Image (cartoon, rainbow, N blue to C red):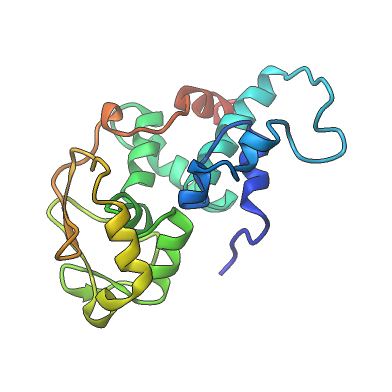
Length: 208
């Protein structure tokens, strides 16, 4: 299964803002964006005039990297979103938000989406009592997501759940960190998705 294996802090620097790809490290002084707030590479500190196409591309790349989705899969998601009723950009965000790895991250069982992906792949997560090891699995309203059996004793998951105790949970989710389970209450609206992207620029990118 293809996936990005390079330094993720480089991705944040390229987009010029924190994408929170390394969990708690992004909140510390070690964050690469805080230390070097310019793009990576030997020409990173030079002046660059960004074209209209460049603005659209960067917004698309930013969203793709936030959720850890590769190009072809992202294009398939966009194609689905464009065929659904409603606003295409919001449909795209909704599809990405309902991925299982994102839900595991949102519920506080993982410190980052990439870590959530690993937990799902290693069969630590169940949906409605059944093991699911596909990070892109799309959850539905009413689904119950739990940490499986002995996996609840993993120190990593315990630490993540403890760190998430004081964090706010999206309104469309219900989480019990002590029981290590959560439930999908509703399909998220755009106002409930705290993703700092201008999705209309992504729609314009694919509409060229």
